[in-house]
Each structure stands twice: as structure tokens, then as C-alpha cells.
Image (tube, rainbow, N blue to C red; front, side, top):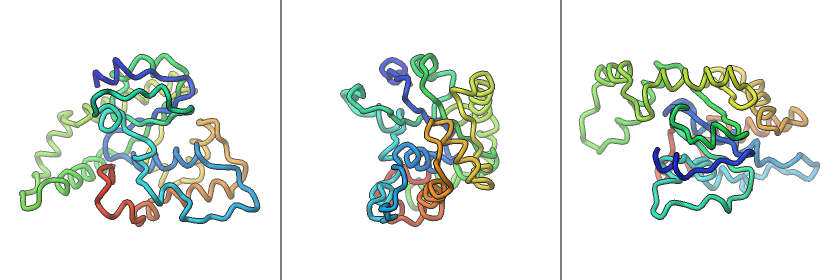
Length: 235
């Protein structure tokens, strides 16, 4: 976190995605990437799946997580040459974000999820990631740790509350999304997301195309997300 705080310089047109682990990060990355990168629909536009970047790479390739991808190599990366608008992700709590993110005009899109489902998903994820043959981590201990605030990105409830309170103060800067609402009302929530990003949809056809490209079922079944090569699958 310190390397990010000291070195990351936000631009006013940056978009920062934020989330606790296992709350819909990959889905949000795919949605924001497609919304930001989409072209205006034309009569010649054929939905050739082979041309879709999401077929070639996991969303984490296009939207890097600052603390686990961008700032892990030495020397630290020079992000100044990246074209605008830049799209990044973080699991960091709002309180430890770089000042340049908090004080600039850049936008933050936050997603969270029901704590019970977050815990179960995280428990399964870490048990699957462990070495084969090792005993699964007891769920009772995982539950106790979660309730006690033991979490890779800090106490879960503090994490959510920080972003929620800031989103109430600065709705123009922070959009607060819930995983469950994205599932029950994908069209309405994705329209809301696109408007917040300054990329409103022209028609329902554009919305439907993004929803198809980023549907959980499609993302799960794409070969690039099934072969186990990509280390960010499942976030």
C-alpha cells in the first residue's frame, strides 16, 4: 500500500474500481472495460466474438489491480505514458487510498456484496487455491476471523462503510454498487454505471450488447477463464 500511496498520481479522468475481495470484482472490471472501450453501434457492426478482447484475455489483463499487479515489480512502473482515460482497480480501503485519488476529480466505482456470500466465496476460493492434498481451512475459523475483521483488505464492514459514507458525501465522485442489484436489475444498474462514467448508452441495443459480453455465464465459459493460466480468475 505504501508504494501506491507514495507513487500513484491520479489524473482527473482516471476511473478507479474498488471492492473487497470476492464481491464481483472481475464482473465489474469486465463491465467498466466494455463501457469505456465500446464503439458506437453502426449497421456494419457484426458481433464477431473473435474480435472481443474478453475472448483473448481475462478482464484483469485490461484493468490491473494496483496492489497485486501494477506495483509488484521492480523498478516500479511509470504510468505517466498510459493514454487517458486510465482504468485501475484496488482492494484498498478508502482511508488508505493515495491522496491524489481522493483529492482529484477522478471517479471511483465501488462494488460490495452480501457479507455471508462474500465469506463463503472467499472460503471456497482460498481452499481451492491451497496445495492439493492439504486439509481445507475450517469454515468455523474462517467465520470467526471474518467477524473479527481478519480480511486481506482490512475489516469487511469498515471497508464497506467507508466507501458508502463517502459516496453519500460525494455522489458525483463515488458510485456505490451492490452485487445483488447488478444480478436482479442488470439493465438498470449498467445504465446507471455508464451514465456515471460519462458514457451513457444511445439505445437498448448497446446495453444488451454489453450485458451479453459481460454476462457471468459467458465470462465463466470463455476458454481464457477456464484454463487455469490466469491468476486473477475468480476475484
